[in-house]
Image (cartoon, rainbow, N blue to C red):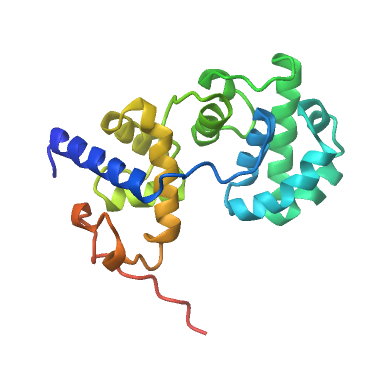
Length: 223
């Protein structure tokens, strides 16, 4: 296992390469306000950002702010977000979060981690996204499925729990780059290091990756 100092050097080199590979990488969700970002992030669970962005224009036109979501007819809300999957739970969380925002935070999404975590349906992943992209505050590392997979493959963590992965990455990376790391690693996961068939032969990180060429592609189900 690499020494902590060596692992940190590797993480910084990986970060530098990711910045060169994806210089313009940014949050893929379309939003204008923190509450729209919160809602879009909740919808993105187990759903592609592309699909979310197809749903949100009509959604945000119908419900432009936290008060509108808080007072929404649940059936109508569920209908608008149905295609994102798990729509009943998502509608419940969105409405519950917005009701609390209206009741406890004067209709404004809070910009503190501890307060965000009191909102229904909001865990650290969602809170990190909202803080970083809604308020420019890096309080942690967003760990989605891409970040989880690649951080393990790159040998930066051996954990599967997102909170423990986040803690490992926060020790290795400068705070100002915590969200930069996540966004760029997500781009790399989509473009090169896929779950089923990573293209290690064209990966610019392969000389630093202990998993390069070692990942067995997932088999397609037999028909």
